[in-house]
Length: 526
Image (cartoon, rainbow, N blue to C red; front, side, top):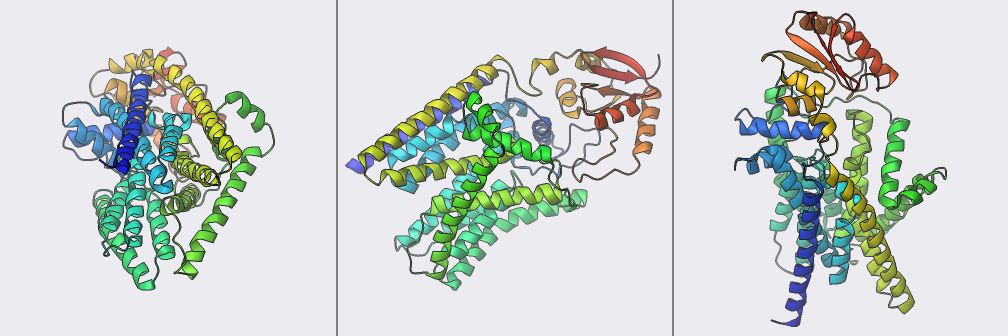
């Protein structure tokens, strides 16, 4: 075995150990299962529906309609693993734990391929594995870990396609076809995968030498991707008369949403809570940092990409870093357009921003490696100390989350839900009793009963007023007073004024059959 092979083996061993540690970290932190949200329960219920032979349906709702709002990727993988007999709720924990390790490993390979430095690959893997924001994104039963996995794999196959060309090997499209399939899998996991599609199309047009090559490569890429997208759209049109359950309606970004995004960005950039609180008091500090960072990346992309486009004979930019930088803008453009035109309920939460964080870590390591190549002893010392400092602070921050999560579940996995007296009351209702509730997800999870959603004045997706609200309230009252259903309102009195006014409308004239810890269940009069 030559020297290169030995060093490569040592790198794989080191990355494997880091990946195994990352997997173990999620497993240790979630003894009661992954954190759960409404979307989590939607994915789990969809997987259970697939396993039952009913197809991908809204099993947590009494209507049990076909799911189109969420693509099927995550639920399908949960169901596939669940064929062995394990419930999708449990499968999710093991799957996301393995994905945290797999994504750590893929990033280590990306760092190595990008810089030709094994140390850079190890540093990138460590930065990812100890980052609190990305750790938390994997500690919840959501689709982001699987989406990130397909995205990272697509970056690698795309770079392999260009590397074969630069090595003067015969033209071979297998890696481009593989990229198209992986992007399709990412799209079927999250609709945001369209940002990956746009990223690689733009890269193919900018970086290929001739227009014939540009158009041919784009065509091959699209042919690899489109059958999956079209197949899913046709299924949705057949079963639900819509492609993705989105309607194009303009709704501006709210100040609350922007503040949520800034806070989550601050958590990623500054891993120490005390420092973060101090800096966030400076007006627009994190907004300015984000804007400066975006501007620097945009200028770097323009210089690299446009030079290659207008001067085809010039040097090809490093593919992995270039496409990750390009993807940041494509992904953010996709999210902004979704929020503005298609889904007002989408917020700048951690799960939404996590793919951007991954690409930022890739570019951080690229910058560090570029500075390292300066060969200045003092500069190298500063880079090494900075890397150790960031990894150490991140590990310290993550350890606090690990300790907290290990003590109990988060979200709907918390004891506050599974030990709820209101849940116990609902569980004992006669079979066939309908349940109207503001928490359909946890009610389905802990009682096994599908539920009805409440009438509402405003559609959370479109941001527009719903028609026939009063008729919905009247129908609910009639159903409850007839004894065929109950109304379960959780956290009654803790919502904002507008939401609370809806709850008061719904509860008016009904009998309070149970009340505990702010949870109220209304029934017919005894």
